[in-house]
Amino acid sequence: MEVTIGVQNLTRELVVETDQTSDEVAAAVKEALDGGTSFELTDSRGRRVIVPATAIGYVELGTGAQRPVGFGSL
Image (tube, rainbow, N blue to C red):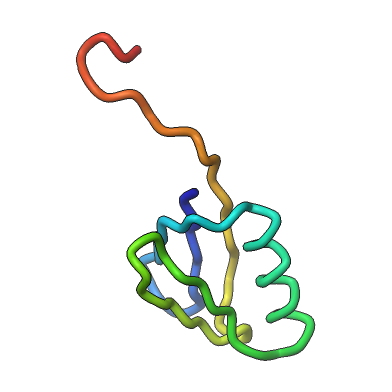
């Protein structure tokens, strides 16, 4: 699933591909925002992304569906 994180005072957003479900990611974001701690996410390659909860502007959760590739994929 693709997760897009908008960080305050940055012009670019963070895009992370993760194996976690949208419910797991949403729970982690809510926990970080409620507790004032950091939001931590592990991507599909095992790398960790850590964003301070105070710096989160928005979090967009994508779908887990794969997009078709090729000329006949419309």
